[in-house]
Image 1 (cartoon, one colour):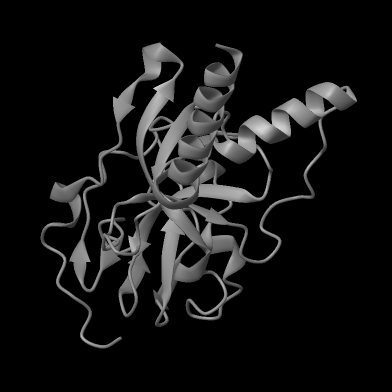
Image 2 (cartoon, rainbow, N blue to C red):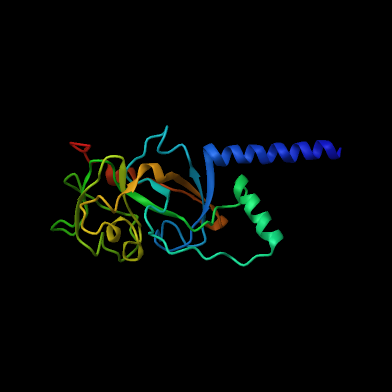
Length: 222
């Protein structure tokens, strides 16, 4: 009986590890940069099959590794040795959400080759010349307080938080390089956030807002 129980537990942990490594992973939302789409403290499930083999789309909410010191140095929580070991193990196999402090979550606003500008005469963000209506923006926010005119380099994406007035995203990190420094390498993308799973009252599927980007043409050059 004990042997069977041990086998079941080991197999369950192995299955969880496989799922976390190649298919899905849970992440903790540490800030309000995606309000009200995501609230600080939410837990989300990320589909790790994006951007490969599933194609990345404009509007996808993605988790990615810190590209270049976008985040401050993480503060290590104070735990006992046993609690720290248990937390690390459960996070490693995917039974707890990652809270490593070196990942960000934002919305993809520009794919490779896209020309992204803010703002036009009507104070709207444009992609490849098409103005967007953005229903996911935090109430009262404008598309961007800072003006920019960039072209997303090959193999990279331009990302912005839904709470535009409280998001350290591609905009402040670009340093007037026309998209070269502020864009995120696709190689750093962990996957697409597909649903909020905790707390229960926040449960929701995360939309890529297809109507917002439906009229945007493909980039003319990549």
